[in-house]
Image 1 (spheres, rainbow, N blue to C red):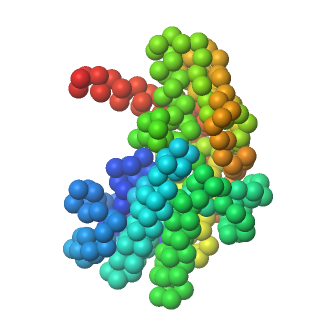
Image 2 (image 1 turned 90 degrees about the vertical axis):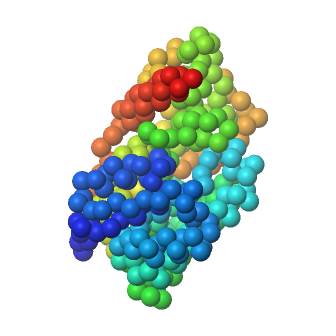
Image 3 (image 1 turned 120 degrees about the vertical axis):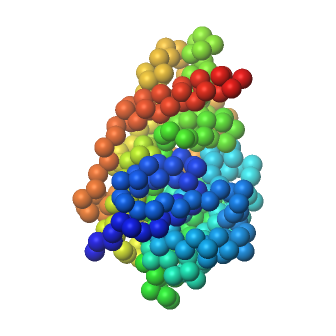
Length: 317
């Protein structure tokens, strides 16, 4: 099938986040009218506010990129926020989209929806086949519920609501706060600070052995627009690059990009998380889409953005 975005009103929920802003940039080439609303005006966790805004704005297409997200530390210390916020966002936006006759909706999940000991690479049908990774189970449960909501509204009302499961993401607009960020931006911030301070070592959480797949956010945005235009199925779709690296390898690539020549020290008292998390993106790749950005190229672009933002912060005092 082919779904045209030209002339459609497209609401990107979460447009200020890393993923949402990348999707906004990609959609600027599609001839559609972009709708946004700031969280100070509409709290997506409050149903009445979502209903009021959507009834007025009347979007034709909705992309749910809004979420409460974070790394292992954030998930471990804020479990109630992670499950509550993400459940409410999915429920309020998907149900209100149905009630306002939204033509197409794309819900973004996460690779952490899969069981801790999934087969590798992880196929879509591994969902709900085993226990979740304890360090992110709260977020995962909420994201699984969002997928099932899309499938339920499709089954009962015939809605063209689809779901995509991105792998680990990074890029411009990422969160670099050490207490709440994911592994790549956290390591980038640490390595940059060590370079500036002329330190000879950087401490990394865990053993460095876990394997992770990393995707540049601009590639994700391109994949999502591709799915909106070409996919209309009940099953969720994995979105990844098809290869993984160890945390130690990622750190070494970051050191090269940043220009840090020191050594890495592993804090073995910190958890590793899942031992491996590589997604099987055969379904997406077989449709004719493929990623364009290598890890080193993506990290270089991200670091350039990081430096520009650091310069702006210093100018503002």
